[in-house]
Length: 297
Image (tube, rainbow, N blue to C red; front, side, top):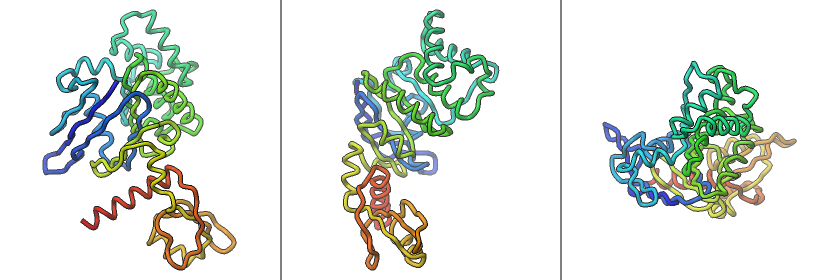
């Protein structure tokens, strides 16, 4: 399966561009969409699930324009929005059963089997009879994940799925998506949490202020930051100067002041040692360079 996003733009009254000429190709497996809050990720997701219409451009699924095949495309998609809401008078299992019926699962026997499977997979089986709106924040997020996966969709789109999840729940969710990603399924994971991408995705894109600024593999992005990540022990005075020159990634108290990691060119007068780059370093490095470029224009 292949998704092609072609020259996609969305402008609001007044001229604000939420998306600006986005071109992306997405194939089977896990695809990460990374960017800060307000980058345009959620807008792109809503267009892809046919909840919004773009001002220009189109989205093709296996060559079919989603604007012309809305009903067919919706049966193929499982979607977890960032601001997911529940029906107040349904138990957890009833909510999933309702979601399965909406997705076209007509056999009650098959639905109930699938409901229990999904409740088990997200760790909510023992809470199946609890009212959905009475679940904790993390549990509600897990139930939202279950409804996105309930009908075996061939395209799964999840927007900030690990928000509100504790570390154990986040790992459980990543493993669940990784298992699905081994099948002929497209999984699009939109997030501002770098760890969600580095742990699961073999392809990714970066959005910022509605523009696409990177598409490729996480490893390729990390390579771009090689030679630009440093560790240094500095005094409090040096720290105050350094934070105005480069992005500081981590700060740990030391006997002489601070042990820091930072990204960028090594400033004069700072004794620093190179550090192997990871995806978080690469994200900061790439975003910082792009922002400098835009500010100079």
